Image 1: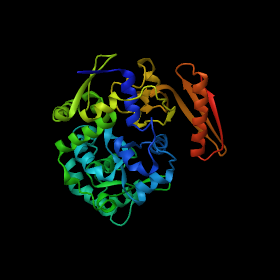
Image 2: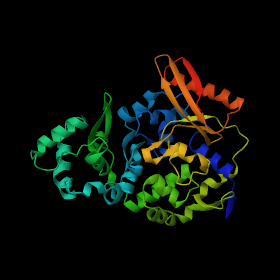
Image 3: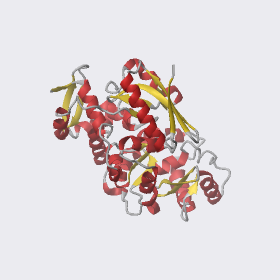
Image 4: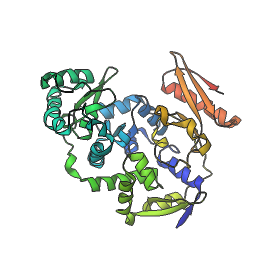
Length: 383
C-alpha cells in the first residue's frame, strides 16, 4: 500500500476543489459537477463558493446557468440539504438518494400528524402537480392552491408546506418538483417535467447511481473512507462500504503517513497525487459557511487541527462557520458586514497571523469587496 503524507493529501484536495488554481468562467458547469454540487441552504453560499473557484466570476453567470440555460438545477439531496447540481447528473443523484428519503431522512413524515405515504402519493402529489401546471409558485401560493384542490380541511394538511422542507422536500426527492427562479426573495417551486423536459430519471438504477456517485465523490474528495462518503452523502456507512466494494477494480488504497489510516482513491488519479508540487504557493481563501470544501469528510484531519473543530463545526446550532484557508488548512473563521460603501471582514484566527498572511488577507478582502460591489474594505482581527 502506498503511503501518502498529510501535506500532500491536503494539497491534492485543494487542487481538486479548484482552490489551488481557479477555473475559467466558461467552465462553471464543470466546476459544479466536479465538486459534486454547491451547498445552497444559504442563498449567498453558492455564489461565494464559485467566486473562490472561478476566475472573474460574476453572480449572473450562475443565475443564467440555473434559470435561463437550466444546465444547473437546485434541489434537495446530500444530507437532506439544498444543493445545486448539473441537470444532466440529476438521474444519478435522484436514484442514489430516493430510497434514503423514505427510510431515513423523511421518517418524521411517518407520524400520525402527517398524511401517510399512500395518501401523499395517490392524493397529494397529483394535486401539487396540478397546482403547478400553469407556472412556478411560492410556497404559500402552492399551499393555498393545493389545499383548495384537496377540498378537505379535516385532513392533517397544515404542516405539509412547512418552511424547512415538508412535502416539497419529498416531491423533490421523488423527482416531481425542483426549485425555480426565486420570486423576489422567496423560493419558488416548479414541476421537474416542465422545467427540465429532456431529463429522464429512469436512466439508471439505485446501485448504478450510487456507484457513479461514489466515483464522482472520490474524484474530488478522495482519498476518503467509507465513513467519509457516508458523512458527506447522508447514506448509511454500510451502503457506502458496499459501493466501495463494488468498485475495487478502479480504486486504489493509500495509507496516510501521520495517522496510519487507510483511504480509497481513484486509481487513475494516483499519478496526479504523486507529482504535486508542494512548494507551489497556495492562495489564501475566504470560504463561505457550509462551503463544499468543509463538508466532504467525517475525519477532517486534512483541513483542520482537532483542537479547533468546535470553532468551525457547530452541530448543536446547525452551523458551519465561514473559514479562512492558508495552504489548504483552516486557520481561522471570518464574518463579513457590508454597507453601501464598506465591507468589513472580522477574522478570528486560531493563531497569530504573520505579516505576509495579513497582507494577502487584506488583498483578498479587497477582491471580495469588488465582487460585492463596494470600493472600501477593512480587515478587523477579532479576539
